[in-house]
Amino acid sequence: QVQLVESGGGLVQAGGSLRLSCAASGRTSSTYVMGWFRQAPGKEREFVAAVDWSGAKTSYEESVKGRFIISRDNAKNTMYLQMNSLKPEDTAVYYCAARRDAYSAYGSRAAYNYWGQGTQVTVSS
Image 1: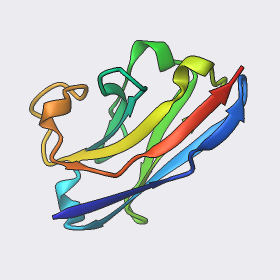
Image 2: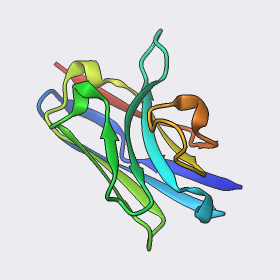
Image 3: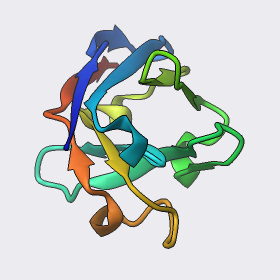
């Protein structure tokens, strides 16, 4: 089993920045791909970004490209999401997720085996 705990959410003004962290514990060898998803009120949970074990392969949802940067530090079992130029439409609960393999698209929500509890990000206009 893998446990995932997010931190770093909060309230920020439009144009500001936040950095989310996701700490993994347990069987961390099962976190070959780690990703971030988000869910706004009344909407489906959507893919934001993902990164493979090496950190070399990343994937981003179109609306966050150029603004968000995903990374991971395997020595610390931690993944990060640096969010810059935040917009009110980025407001959501952000979830950390992990999966054991990379056989399907990184944005496939169903392919993730483990999930965190989420952290709220609110961007005011």
